[in-house]
Length: 299
Image (tube, rainbow, N blue to C red; front, side):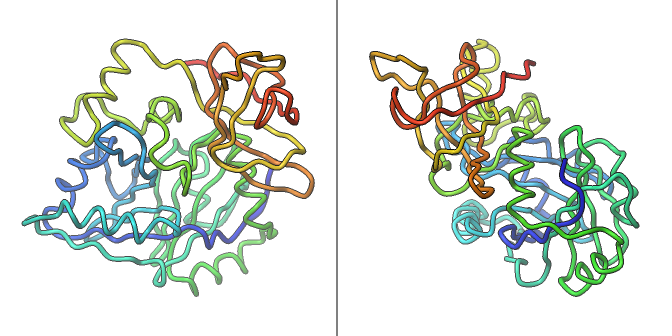
């Protein structure tokens, strides 16, 4: 298990403010934004009209609005698309990636504000101005620490924790089968295929949002046939790579790679894989390199 801290420069932040900010976010994202408080954030997805996930994000309440924590590579595209829906709403959307930074903390104990939420449920947030900590999903004790870069660096340098690198952090994410959507993975998967329903990232009684009808139909008809799982291989993979059952004659794939992290000779990845499939698969072709995927954790 990973222990220590990692700077995560590939994460950025969007500040959403204005008197209509909560209602605006409520009408766009899969989670129930009404439940967000200064001590409880949430994970959420933004989907296209076909119900496919465009972006994943952590949403946190701050004094005068909300912060969206998203991959920095997608911020420009996310801002551009969100602004198309603001219309006459009193909402401002600003890139805070140059203002605040994000670090990942994995530890059993840590100074405030991280220590206060390590034993709390996922989404729990604690503040020690100007810093903010949020508990991440999963059985391991992990948090994000957010704040002005100088304040984050000072906390890290005085925390007593050792440093690790971002690749180790994202490999741990993949090993825990936590979803991460970037680049080629955008608009490929329905929320339930990424286990967003299991992670509390979805509300089915909050009203309309993009893709809601298709997403609800999948829930109530029980038609989720593939789920996100973790995997490992020595082969080189990229998001979008296809997985095959050994000996497949028809060439029909049984899975698709979602995210990839390289650790030396090892490739740690997540993939959406058919529910009836387990164990060793092949990458890119029925006779391709072997990969091993975890079993589905179940509902």
